[in-house]
Length: 151
Image (cartoon, rainbow, N blue to C red; front, side):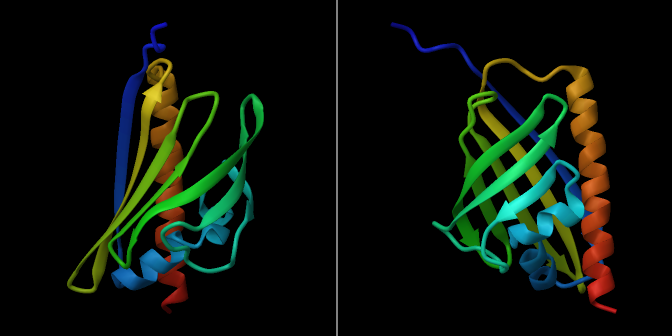
């Protein structure tokens, strides 16, 4: 029996934050912060701290079709530069989220990359536009929150 045909999808967004990489990294790798900056995320079950390789956490999302529960595992943590988490889903296959922090002259370029390595179909242009809009709001929220904590 043949495996179902899937497609890979990837989307990255970045922002420059006026803070050292450690401050940005510690904020975004603590899943308890996610509802503060990510509109879809409304409940997190995890320790209230940055999570390391192998640690697990649970997230609840609100999406157009209702609530989705995700069980995440931290696949890689190289503090304060790289963090990768993965969740398995029935609706779009695995979700892999990668955060990178690159510090230069006291500022940090934070990049959030979303990967769906085995989607059933590519997202529509409308879905991609919605992802881009949500990412712009989320990154602006991260920037505002991290910079405010430094004042």
